[in-house]
Image 1 (cartoon, rainbow over the protein chains, first blue to last red):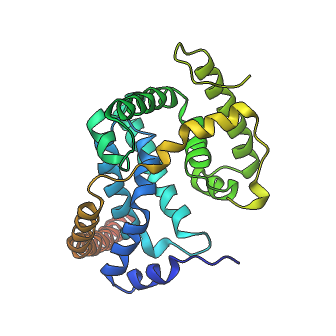
Image 2 (cartoon, each protein chain N blue to C red):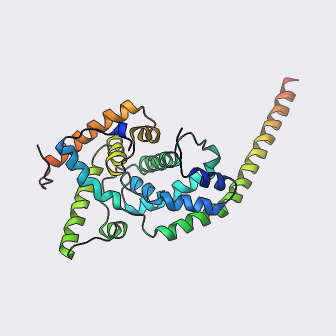
Amino acid sequence: MFTDPDQPLVRAALAGDLHAFEQLVERHRDVVFRVVARLVASDQEAEDLTQDTFLRAFHRLERYRGEAPFRSWLLRIAHNTAVTHVTQAGRVATHPLDAAGEEVAMSIEAGSPADQLERRERRQRLDTKLKGLGRAHRTVLVLRDIEGLSYGEIARITDAPVGSVKGRLHRARSEFIDVLRNNTYDWELPR
Amino acid sequence: MTDEDAEPLTPAEERVRALLHPFSEARLPDGAERTRSIAHTARWQRPVRRALVAVGTAGAALGGGLGTLVRGRRDR
């Protein structure tokens, strides 16, 4: 049995309380945006798909049975929405985040302007490399190594057995390490 | 992450995780405004959606009824 702090809000939203739904959006908007942003080509698309995800969730809320945390259910919708979008758009999400969007999206950074610029460039390079991975590998890497989700939660989101998630994550990390090692930019990866 | 999920990482995997960490700090731009916009859209979409579902259900029922009638006449 698990306790999900979102359940009271979900119940209230189901009873017609739109303010409760707004609170759910407030709680989860950033994680939905982050996950979607790593799967699609641009920040702008990720913003629009974040909105789509919440609206889909709102209209399907009656189907949520509360057997898993609300966040998992929501991220599954976000994942499917992003995958459908990328498939329909017919292009691989390999474009780096635009500098302006990244600047807004990231929290306020410390350091000199030169340091900030260097960090931003580094993030953009890394984003390009990450988006060069296949979707399945990228997804597990994002959910585990960026969002810190459990294997069980990742399994629910990606609709895969836990064993497959573990194997996929292992291969994703190996692939990403290879990609970074074969890059001219020095990522300071230990041997 | 739960304890049972804790895993020993190689130094390179640890480095990858550290490199990816800044992405976990990203926020939805104009989050508060977006939240209001989502709630506003949900508010007006709900009655429209319900009306469309009702029309769809009625249409399907009507189609089903007509289909039964047509089949009945054909069978006679």
